[in-house]
Length: 462
Image 1 (cartoon, helix red, strand yellow):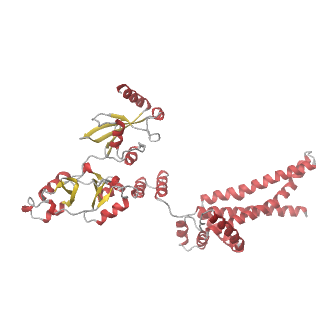
Image 2 (cartoon, helix red, strand yellow):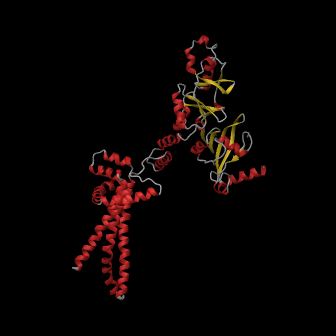
Image 3 (tube, one colour):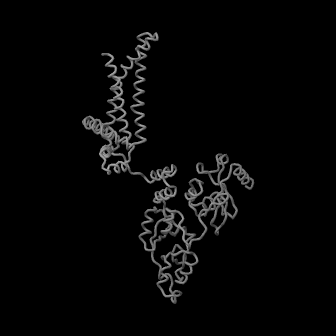
């Protein structure tokens, strides 16, 4: 009779461990599943998938049921397994000459360790790892037994869940029945980059998606064509001058100004010229053709800028700074390029904002700092500058001349550090000036030896 009870106890131990495994697998698989995945499988009409959807929609209740099941099976497992294992181990210790009372104590302790270890490994850790690796398959397998258990113990689960929710509300947190499935742009961007790194997403597709997600965080100031690059026409210029400017620059839209950009009357498009006969184009001033366009603050976010530009027939908006002066011009092309990258046609200049050269990158001085990082890999620290030219000016502390070089600061510390001299760094060389504006800069990654030599040369000249 004793042998039969021992066998039944061992069988019960295995069955209860399997029960614990089922509840653990159900718990982790339900929490690992995205709502979109659950809904997609449920639409196929599969019964098990619909049961998973039912469980996922009452997630808090199902998790409470899983916790109750884990607690019940674990307690019964310990109650059954420990004395049975101790009874099996005691004769072994007695046979090797151990005192019977000591053998009983050691057997009980060892039985506790064995029962707990086996229950933890096979009842918790193994099913947990399987559920995380294959959440949908695991949820489909466990949904039926979990729902049945929840129905039987519904009253107890409601009591325990209600008590826990009451405590949580007292702590100032509102309990949620379902997991949050929405993601912030930052989280989505991280997912896109991770997917691209692991090869699950094409690099170009990932880049467009990442830029799209960051677009709304950009300001009009970051998206615009800056004032120094805006081609304008005076109000007294004629339609013939408009055609000549379009032919010379390749642009189709021009602000019409009264003296300077701060007094912009409107914008003209080259297609307006062809609505007038050729013989009168030299007599009609552009102030008669200029159309008003939206004026947006430099701080306006990208999404709102896009709406304003799209709503205007000229597909352009003036950007003003905090003092009311014209900071630049933002066009639909500027907005498209922010997402798709450089968009060129037969009228655009050949010179690109970033070109790979033998010893580094040849960059426009107007390139934004985040674009510099994306194109070259150099990460600049935060500072009172928006462009690469501004960063170089900050480093030099004066208006540069062609050929000036400066060691760029470390992105972490904000200055040239021991880390940079140990691991190399970056040097910026002014390649071309446009008046007092830095037009082209060459970014050069250098070795530790070259960086040390350049730093020593700077100090000797200083």
